[in-house]
Every structure is written in C-alpha cells, then in structure tokens.
Amino acid sequence: MVNRNYLLIFLMLICGKLQAQENDYQRADSISTVLYEAGNWQALIDSGKNFIRTKNDFPALRLRLAYAFFINQKYTEALQQYDAILAGNSYHQTARLYAYWCNLYLNRFAAADYHASFIDQNTLSNLHLKKFGLTVAGLESSLKLPEDVTRNNAVYTRVFAGNRLGWHLQAEHSVAYYNQENQERFYPQNPNQKYDPDQYEIYEKLNYQFNPKLSLLGAYHFLKNERSNHIALLGLKYIQNKVELQADVNYANIDQTSIFQYNAKLNWYPLGNLNFYTITRGVLQHSNSNQFIFSQLFGGKIMKNSWAETSVTFGQQDNYLEYDALYIYNSADVTTFRNTETIYIRLNAHLLLPLTYMFEQKNNVFFNRYYNQHSITAAILWRF
Image (cartoon, rainbow, N blue to C red; front, side, top):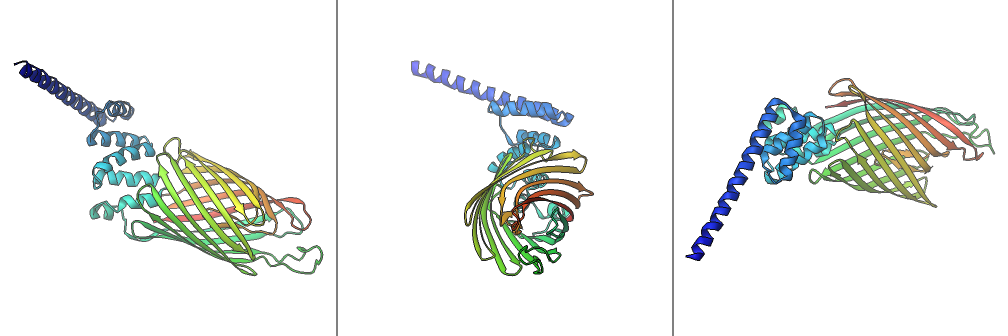
C-alpha cells in the first residue's frame, strides 16, 4: 500500500512537470508568434533568446528568431539559428534558403553554394542558380607613380573570372600584364643599360567546400619576366559565427630564389554583417632570411550601397605573396610600408566598382634610399 502511494505521488509529479513543460512550450510558441506577426523584431530576439536559454527550444521558435536577426541584418546570429535547425533536419528548405542568403550577404560565396546544393530545383530556378556556370567576371587596372627620377611609371592590368564547378567547388582565373617603361637609368654603374621589368601572369585558384564551415584552398600562379617563376598555395579556411580563420602555406620560386611563406588570417564581423569588419593577417616568410609581415584592415558601410576600407602593411615585402598568392610584390625595390584606401560602389545587384589608392614606401636597391610610390586602381566587377 505504501509503495502504491509513493508510485502515485511520483506519477503526479511527472504529470505536473510534463504539464508545466507543455505550458512553457505553448507560452513560448504563442508569444513568439504574436511578436513575429507584429514585426516586433527586437522583442522577438530578446524573448526568443530567453526561451532558448530556459530550454524552451523548438524549430518554429528558431525560425522566427532567425528571421528577426535576418531582418535586422545580423546575419551571423541568424546563421546560428538556421544551423541549429539544420542539425536536426538537413533538408529544411526555409533554413537552407536563408542560410544561403546570410552567407551571400557576408561575401561567403562558397559557403552559400554549399547550402544551395540542398535547395529544391524550383527555388534554384527562381534564384537563377545553376550547378555549373560563371559566378563573376571583371577587369582591374592600376597606374603606379614612383617619386624617384631613376624609376618610371608602370601600369598593371588584370582580367579575371570565376565559375562554379558543382555546388562544392569554385574556381578563379586571372590573366595579368605588368608594364613599366624601359628604365634607362636603372643601373647606376651602367646608365645606358636598359632594364625591362615587364611581366605576364596566369593565376588559378580552387576552393572546395567540405561543409558550411570548412573549405580547402589551392592556388597556382605562373609569372613570366626574364625568367619563368612559379608560386603555389595550399590552405584551410574555417568559419565560426562572426569569425573566419585561414591558414595557408605558400611556396615560390621567383628569380631562382626559393621562398616559403606561412600565412594566418582572421576576419571578424562584430556586428554580424558588413557594416563593420576587420581583417588581421600575420605572415612569416623564409628565404635568405626570416621576415615577419603584419597587415591590418578595417572596413565598413559608409552609405547605402557603398563601403570603404583602410589598411596598413608593415615589414619587408620582398617577393611577398598576398590575397591567396594573387598579388606578388617582387619589385627590385622592396616595399617596406603600405597604406591602402578603397571605396566599393555597388550600382546594382550585379555590378560593383572598386576604386583604390595605395601609398608605398620603397627602398631603391642601388642607392639605398627610400622613396614614395602612389598607385591608383580602378576596377569593374560583374557578379552573375
């Protein structure tokens, strides 16, 4: 009899707890629904986070909370909610679609494509997304103006394109030409000897996306001047909420000199969007000696459809490889400091116009004196 009483008490407690949980669920569901339908996004964010914190967690609540973050342009926070939904149902179409958009608005194009691989064909057709095809094409041209009587002006021009080779693999292609007027006074010991620094370049890069967070990078750069030069890169990139981490190893044979370069890069989006972001990069380069190079970039939205970036780079940039070995600083006169200012103007959903000013402090290789160089770069980029 006593045991039966204990059993009844135990069952009553369990039923009461289940009833309380049911009431908590109904309360979380009804409050989040009312706030969602009223468009009261901040209140929905506050209450939704509190419900999840108190273990009232279910997919419909996560969807409403994610949409509130999305509307407020807090894309990294929205992605956290969509990731939680997809952990339980990897084919949840709404979560996949908005995860695609969030990554797209953070310029995480390879991660966006990964999510697109789960989206139904009708939605893909409405988005004009195809498994194979062009993703981007563009042109950039730069005028370089050195403040040294023994150095002439130069022009760098690059044509580039990118394409999708399936939902997990993206490729980038570039052809570039660097032209500098013949340097009649380049060699002080023989002023009549000319120096021809013209260069032709071919660049290929692949990005394989294992999952929404992890990707493998590989790149090859062929550079032809008086010699044939080869550069290769292999790296990993990892995305975690507001942070992107990349580590890569570069090997180059430039002008019969072997170079190993080890890069670590951190991208941070403190607001969860492109309204403000930072890129920090540390580089260890080993050739004839060890060099450490550090760069810091700050960027953000300055007005509707316009962004600005400012960056500085410190260190001996001798045969220095940047932007996944796309740009190679192999001038005879080594750059020791750079300041770069860039403005991006988006004219529509497809067309972007970047304009860049770069200030460099360089060391004249023969006279061991410093001089300044100014560069202006204009580009046009079309994203399909």
